[in-house]
Image (cartoon, rainbow, N blue to C red; front, side, top):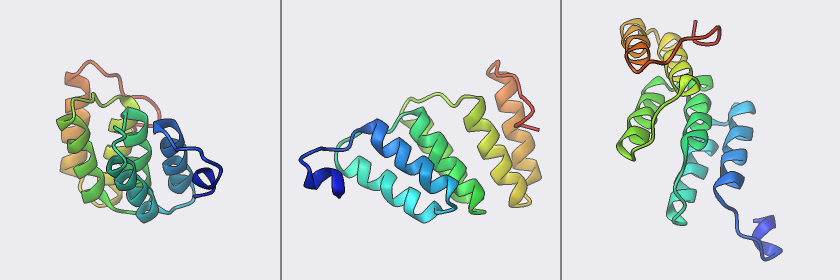
Length: 120
């Protein structure tokens, strides 16, 4: 709102940064609200945006929402990276969904992505 009062329009980078700030502050609901607002404004989220939103859901214990976002990004033609998979795997782990976590780890490796310290 402050940006708009000054005649500035937020862009993908601005929204991604705001979603990331929500993730770090444990505000997963606000992060999803910003993701929705962004799309209503006709801005296309990118991998960084989705990573921040998935991480926000992971930190908020919302594994189902995290996986939904994981699917949405792929439906939009975006390719998950190591960060995306790590956040989704962690969300499943926190939700007690170990079979889903293992499935994601397998998908990650099938795509040629190497798990890192964060993944495990």
